[in-house]
Length: 381
Image (cartoon, rainbow, N blue to C red; front, side, top):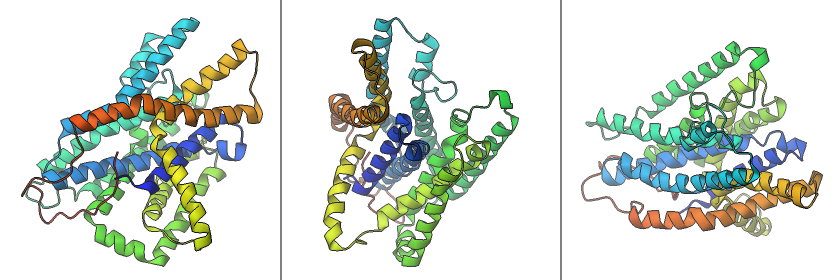
């Protein structure tokens, strides 16, 4: 069962990205890049939750099964998008080099830009999908006598967080001014994976120390404190230029802490509006969750739709879309096109995946340690 509130956060994240790439409303487009940071925290929380839940149900984690299910979620739509790109470029006589395609195919486009700049984040996530289950398997292997083999997750996160921060600082410090590019310098996985691992940390506490998290979040002062901290941390993207040396180093830390607080609030805060407003908010939330459900395909296909349709208007109809017409076409068109492509490619493959490798439902008898307690996360990826 999906968590509607997390789908709403996905919607917010993808809309921020579209605002950023539309570059029409400066106050929002200037900071819309933070949608990727929100995606990273959500992915860490959700993906780790799947693996934690698998351990609870089976007493083990299958790397093969996890990677097949992830691959059938990510690869088909992505490679179809690359195929469409290849066909369009070939027809236009503007084919990118084979090296660019190889970097996209192998998911190393975040180390050297390839064809679609926005796909750099997919490289970070793909590396995370490999590293996280390996880490958890190692923890299980070397903690076989413990009812909670993942108790080292908090310390592991601290190591990752400090390492990523130090590497960002060193990279920025040693990059000559002439070659500094704040838009791409922080794309490598080793500089950004701390954001995903913060989601892993939250998922660990939410899964294995649920009672303590529940007790903490039931306190109104605690929720207010987290909300205030999230507002302060996230507002830094409005104060500092996102490509500045300071924010390239500190920004990811500010943002993953802020979005982590927002994630917790989304799970625990409810029924705060008067009834006369609650109905309207519920409808808005349902619509947002619907868009969030398609966020991967919307994110994936935004470049194809935006670039090629705008070029088509200019080349075939001699229409140059600018200002609000461009924004409306790009923003709403990307959402609609992403939904269509999800229904044509992503969702049919997922249905086949779920028949061949169904999501785990019930643990086999006497496999999961009885002392490991996990709350129901109500989420499916």
